[in-house]
Image (cartoon, rainbow, N blue to C red):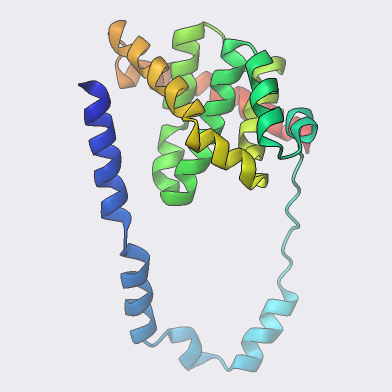
Length: 195
């Protein structure tokens, strides 16, 4: 019953998001912008050239380098990971997938997803789980990996299992959020150390 409710909730969420960007684009296109009225195109181009944009550095982890986008190799290597490692891979994957659809929702769910992992496995972010967490983020560099994860419901099943475990143990969203806060701080430290 819970799975049906979750599926219906996800479907409603996706349906409500459909067409929003198109409507927003049409409204923005119809309204004159102050920038175009105040500044000439030439002035905007000069400002764009002067603007310093930091290059985006992608630190591909050993796991995604090893599987290199090969879906079958990914499935074999994924099975070799410990349960907490698999979960944290999927937590990062789920957050990445959500950030594409609704970035605000994804940022609000970070603590929750990490809290679910601590709750079920009694293991937080450490050297081993961060490696797979990072791999979950990097999986989006390879379309084949994303497709197999979604098609085989690899991460969906793990996240649902962790959610069911939390419900059975009467953990509230606030409890999970609190558990996840410390883990988010650990992730931030790992990211800072890798830069």
